Image 1 (cartoon, helix red, strand yellow):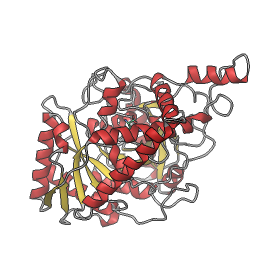
Image 2 (cartoon, rainbow, N blue to C red):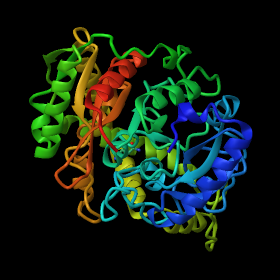
Image 3 (tube, rainbow, N blue to C red):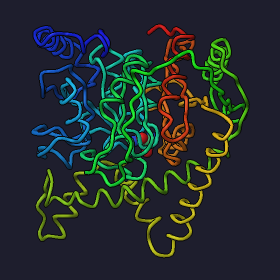
Image 4 (cartoon, rainbow, N blue to C red):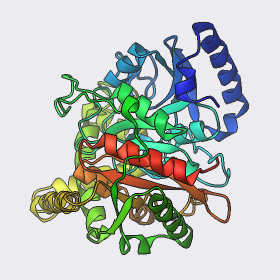
Length: 447
Ligand code: GLN
């Protein structure tokens, strides 16, 4: 597959021809179920779009039954920016319902297969976007990351996935999961393409009140030979599988070889991250999903009165995982538990942010696993709790609002990809991409 950088040089005619071939290729690989459907908006380079990003006149459903029949009346800011930069929205990709999950199995449209082994999950929730890029069915894609949903599927599928600093990329037109954690970001074949796509979609947007007033760009200043100070986490990685630990060692050596200084640091026990995240995310999700009542959007199941219509619509429209989180979110926000759970989670979140601030006083980047294992087989995570626990390496980054990038580093003995992430201080995307490019070059991962 050609890279985004190469594709940006194609003529209009070449692009039109390329898109025809791409469409045929997507149809031939329909079993992967990376795409829900393929429509094209714009004349530019085709980019696959996660099903929770508004593209005008598309059916956009966040992978849910409750949004069947909803047609987006406007473009998300990221789509407007893409169209203005010579890209087009091409196909919407599968995802866990409302971005809640780590496997893409909770989608209304059925599961997506991992192109490296079709018995394995592609990761999630942006599993469709990751599988599309990994299978050569997309030049690049957009995903969203609330607690790892860009980085973890990127790691499982052997591609690059980047989560920007909170506020760098407008959330206007992103179907909200947890508004204080969500960011849209690029999923690409390599680091340079991620930087190019990040540059295109980032920047201040007055339509998003949490958008940062920053517009600096990174891709034309990429510098892989900058020498950085990078923290490794000897204690933290003990929770990872042997394969992941080996990949970590490989990456540490590669970074040393590239001339970076390696220092040791520690993060607090990940059990605090997981508690703070699942309380915060479900609380916000409960509020965000209250709007799906069958009156204003999508599917409606008519009951015997208005209240019954709400109940029937939501009971039939939401899947099990979403219902579980609505219950959890309402519980932690209810009077009597609000102080004990929600407020405590916010305090913990503050501590998590502070621990990162302290580490970044001395280092430029942190190297961390993305997931404790490679992609699991379908049905292998048998309880929701197991799935939540597998988020231990990604969620603190969202709680602290930091930028991070997952870069493919090696493969397990079974040939499954292993990505590792670099984490930078807030708004230090340039440093993040410089370090990632250096790691990518030194590792020379073959897809
Ligand atoms: N796996 C995490 C969750 O289920 C993260 C999902 C995401 O980033 N959207 O909440």
